[in-house]
Image (tube, rainbow, N blue to C red; front, side, top):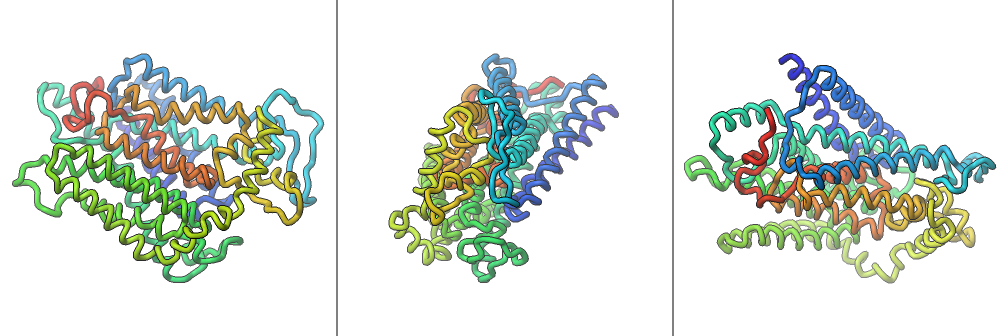
Length: 507
């Protein structure tokens, strides 16, 4: 009994640390500066340390965690998780070897490179070992966050264990409407509220006219208020972050709404229910990417909202017509709010989308393509594009960019084909698992919204650098963790949700 209480306390500590990790990330200037990234890294290491200590404690005391166990006996499901674990380790080893087997390092004091004679050509290597080390420490923290969050999400809370035991004893009873596990539901609440507050702060800051991030910090570059948004000095980074949250918030609202709608009429009233709080959050989160005046952010938001409307309409296909119309009305309200506050400044930028040659991205892409040809297998080293790109400039007037503005291309240039394939394998294993089954069964709409959020970020990566921003990458990793835990197999999840008989854990 005391051992179980100790485990529950460590679960609470891990939960608080996880919330701190992704809540703090965007507020410390978007985690785009070194000190902010190290704050996130330290939190990640603490999460990982507590998690590993919990595992050791459980094995010492002989405790077995009570988990959501849907489909865990299927061999293909187990192998998907094992493969993802192997690939995670391989990516970390790849970065570590690249840093240890460095070919050179960038010396800002002499504005040049210091080359090393001893390095192994047929192993991954880096042309700026300091940058590769920095990226390795980030990836190590993200790996710890992913696996500790996954372990935490799959565990049952004390309330859920008691409830499952009662159902097992009575051998009857099902939940009304789709449900989500307590921990997943709390995670989505914190994510949605934090995102909405971030979007609202960005809107207020934009129209206050200040060029200081959060009204207090003047960035060293990009000091134009119109190019900033909230804590982000680059408006597109803010749009990318917010475009990952609103599909999650919308899908979460739908799940809570369906559950509330199936209650008896005597226990519900119009406008009641906690889920109504999420509707203004959705409107703010959809409108904010448009108000940022980021061209890519606005286009992804509009396209994503169209897809989300289709998804929700299909989910309500057998319902009355006004149920489908409310989704259209919600979308129109969100887009109208965004257009009202942001269209005046966004429209001229959309008109110049091709005339300004995508803000000079063509030259940067050409440099990155040359790198992929010169170093096809191992690339120039993880995280080294900013240092090495200057060597590819044909004249001093050419752009010296720190980012490729195409994360797909930058990954190929820095990781090479070997690292690129490892990263794609990890991505496929994380987001593709719901097709094979998973521990937590949710409505298919929730799965679709998670994919929509991640898919929007992957589309952003074609013309920008969301995965080079630590807060955006961290959010993507959290969503990938959620995707790896859930499944829609075995039904829509509208009856019994995560509490049906097939999902009872051994107690």
